[in-house]
Image 1: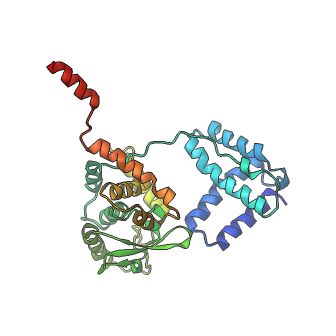
Image 2: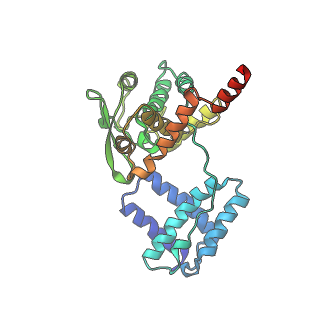
Image 3: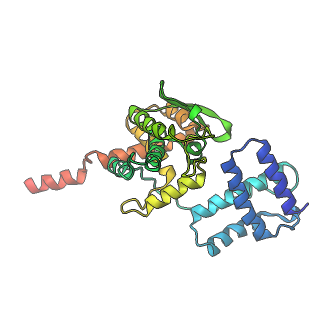
Length: 299
């Protein structure tokens, strides 16, 4: 069996498992890059650890991307390798499938001032401005992923009881409450939406009244990123900001895990560290060195 045939079987398996369109697109895009690197008619029995390592080096050297991006591309290939192994198509030591090491970037959630500046970019004077403001507020107030915002239906939102049914990763549903500010914003958006003829239940629409896509939100944030003072903005940073503020304000970690749709508490625990960093930035830091030097001046 060649690599192209194995890829088609792998993709059929992912569809059978019910993976989201976003996940399927990720596998398709990243694995086709790998097939181009190896040659699609290559026999899968020729796949080995060195090819996996060489592919990562090739990405780093020829695509002008950082190591974190290399890991993102290679992670799909690792899943593909593991699937081939467990289906007994290849025989390798999968424990040696290591992703390229990369320094973890420090996540700095948006400050309160940055959040206010971000929201000030869009008002409710037009339907598109109102839509964009609502998208941003949903991410900030509910911690939704990009794909979760895209997939929201009008029927998923209970305006009376102020909660959203979110269809998350792995077809898992969760209930996420929202505050009065978002409630008012959603009401403003619904007023616009009620004045147009729509055949879709999708909450957010394009200028042509079709459901938005992942690319719609990516382009929105790309435009924001070009504005002065927003160079570090990206969609997932709003989710990080929501979670960090939740912990910072005394929220329970297990409750946050449920709100975020994390499968284990281990992933959620990173926000303890981020909240601690926020305390250091926002609160007055008591420097012991300052005390020593101040005492020296008074002696």
